[in-house]
Amino acid sequence: MTDHKEKMKDIVALCKRRGFIFAASDIYGGINGFWDYGPLGVELKNNLRDRWWRDMVLCPPIGPDGAPISIVGVDSSIIQNPKCWEASGHIGGFNDPMVDCRESKKRYRADHVVVLVSKDGEGASLAFDKDATDEEIDARLKKLAKGKTRDDFEKAQLDQVPAEGFTNIIGPDVKNAGTLTEPRQFNMMFHTYVGAASGDDNKAYLRPETCAGIFLNFKNVVDSSRVKAPFGIAQVGKAFRNEVTPRNFIFRSREFEQMELEWFCEEEEVPMWFDFWVEERTRFWESVGIPKSELYFLDVPKEELAHYSSRTIDVEYRFPFSAPEFDELEGIAHRGCFDLTQHQEFSGTKLDYFDQAGNKRFIPHVIEPSTGLTRGVLALICQAYTVDKDRPSGVYLNFHPAMAPIKAAILPLTAKEEHVPLAQKLYLDLRHEFAVELDIKQNIGRRYARQDEIGTPYCFTVDNDTIADQTVTVRDRNTMSQERIHMDKVKDFLREKIVG
RNA sequence: GCGGGUGUAGUUCAAUGGUAGAACGUCAGCCUUCCAAGCUGAAUAUGCCGGUUCGAUCCCGGUCACCCGCUCCA
Image (cartoon, protein in one colour):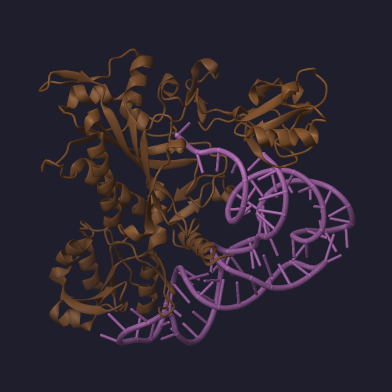
């Protein structure tokens, strides 16, 4: 096992031990792909979420013209009219039938496999990858087709072949017929039934991404909030996908949380805004403690782009399980005018935008910086995790102060009466403004170590000098060094350190 | 969904066909004027279900979860 894998194990253990992240339904043995956030985890997640909301909606970036751009928020329902998912393509386009091969243990998309069925109905049929070259096909025919050539066969797509014919098909990677399973439908969307009676009439879906709720409210927002293009609509919320293989702790979960912005602009301005958002989003990740050196910007190759997108940049982070490679943290996609056009067509409601100044009507193009909040949390934890053999805890979480679940601990040096009341006073004074913790019990080293392990950036310690001159020591998590400041200055100190 | 591996206190590990032990952590108390000190005490575990057996944490089967590799990831 590599160091990186070892590190991931340690991180998962720390997350549980200190109350960041637990397996969902832990006492029942867990449930694959679902996770719960504990007392510190929810603080961390809220901190990241709130910072994103602040940077997007409350205090959006300055645009190219020097004025702040315009972004408003929504919070849409997880369940929407199912037609919405027909329009987006989630129902029609992405539930591909899959077949498994019992012998090669491989899985294939049925529409990606072609079958050569012999014209005379004699002998086995041969399956190939849809991209197989004629040379590859001829080579296998020579081995397996008993003298027949390509001309003796008809081509068919595997999902067009009746299931009873499968026993006669030789899978793409094997030599004997009958190893392919019947095609099975895979749909990433969770479904449910609306109303007490269940049946296909009231089948509905849990959203697989939050953006749809933004497009569905496009007209409502434009009509009600005085936004003028270009502008953005932001949303944070849960999304659900029936991932085939949930993996890597909370990285690929079946229930997760997204932070998505849909930026609506004119088509001609797309390249400019696209670059703008890549830059802004990078700035964001840096501001919460993810250095650019740990990020990789993948310009998604044309052939791998989603059908609606002409350009996507994946912002990837070097997670321990992907290291030295990277895995997706955020996607910045040009979605064209696909979504609004589709929803306009399926709903019959006009979703164009009227530009009063230019006296023109158009369906805006969309740039979508879409990030996983829960993936962001994982990135913050992985980035913060720092081994330090020279300190009692052996490890500390180097969170950016703005992200740290607890900003400061207030510690009376001893549990004696002289120290405790002063510490309590400081704690009561600070807690209105900062997430702080008062910890009285146990020796001081033990308490420092505990705060290191949960990533608390500062500890204020009340000692005998405090009684004499109202100063406390500030202990810095990263350097373990101390300085004295007056109790009255503690608030200013924290304000200065925490604003990121 | 497939294949391989794993499953013992909160964590990391040990042991055993005769009902489990440590370290650290946690809690309580004493002590303590700055980095998990010292002392005393306490709580907490064989994932779940079934089978074999006089008796199963150990053997077998199933299941669930986690890890690795495929597959998938709009």
